[in-house]
Amino acid sequence: MHSRKNLIFESGERYATFVDDDGVLDFWVTLFVTVQLRPSHSQNAILGILQDIAHFKLWEKVNERDVESEFREGKFLSGIDMVSIRDHCAHETRSIRRWYVASLKRNVVPLDKSRYSKTAPFERVGKGHQANRIAHIVQYLGFVARTILRNKSNFSDIEKLIEDMCRRLLKHRPRVSGKSGIRDDSEQCPHPEVFDHLMDCISEESEVNPYRNKGVKLRNALMFELLYHTGMRSGELLSLRVEDIAFGPIASVSIRRLHDDVIDPRRHQPVAKTLPRTIPIPSKLAERLRHYIVEIRASIKGASRHPFVFVTHHAARHCEGNPISDSTFRNRILKPAVKSNEELFNEVTRHGFRHNFNYRLSKKIDAHNEKAKEDPSITPISEKQEMQLRKHLNGWISDHSAAGYNLRHIRDTANKLLSEDAKHQIKFKEASFDVKY
View 1 (cartoon, rainbow, N blue to C red):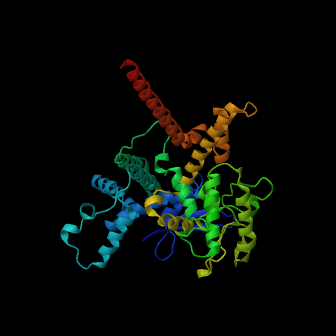
View 2 (tube, one colour):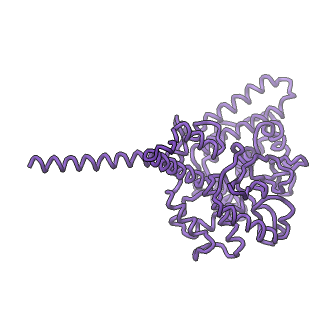
């Protein structure tokens, strides 16, 4: 089966493509990435599109098809094929792959189970995911068909057939309700108290700390504290360098955009999605970071080969001292923390720390403005200043992006006001009742 592979060029550019079981690059996918995606897409965006193409390649295997060869013969997808691809795109890749691998091991497949789409209990994906899959598959198939057949003498007629095939397949995308206005995904983020409990859980002194090694406990606690106090993305956290931390009287961390970094040995390079910026951090956190860098990190073999702050402590497979990868952070650091109290931390995600940071920022601004009402020497923070402050700390350009992260606070404030108004109405009615009777 095909698998995604990241290559690193001498320039530092990360190049994502497909390889087969023998490690050979897939010609058509590599050409598609080079011509269509590489000029305008980031590595992460290309990897997402490749995942959708891999899903289509799995459809070919299940149905014993070779669409590229069919294009050479002037054959295009039929209406039945399009319906089959639509249904295939509605299911999780892993579920279908597990079924397919298991079916290959069976010598005899019962007739009533030979049609996987009707019988296998596959997990489904959301309509938005399904629609994106179909769109990316159409983009890939259109490119391949045009490239294969462009030298035909009747290409102008053939191109109309290709456009018709793409148009008809796109019509099978499910309708996704497009919500106008600000996107609100704060509901997917747990309550701020959950993050406070998590920080207590992963502290070095905690009895329920899920990590064993003392140095690992400190490293992981520092990573979570940086997410908690700065709201930075996990990619920005993993790309932090030692020189990005200011240990002076006013401690801070600097977020920089270092795409296609030659120094970074990771094939899937964690990068900053937002603008460069400098964020203040608590002095105690800076002191603990200094201790980790000078006392713990410096003693780890291989850490001196690069400037990245957070490194692997495990010596297996010659990875000791390597900068921590995105998959390591998700599976070896965040996942054990969530599993330490799965009932409470089940909804905690890396991006949730960013929402939690902005919620606490809103509460701090509210507290500042309350003090300003009592103390004329304190200048209150206006709504416009709050927006500018939020954009700077999060690295955003537009007000629209910033507004979406303040919706939980707005909702809580509205509920509080309504609750207070309801209590006032009840007291007023009770007082009126006493006067009347």
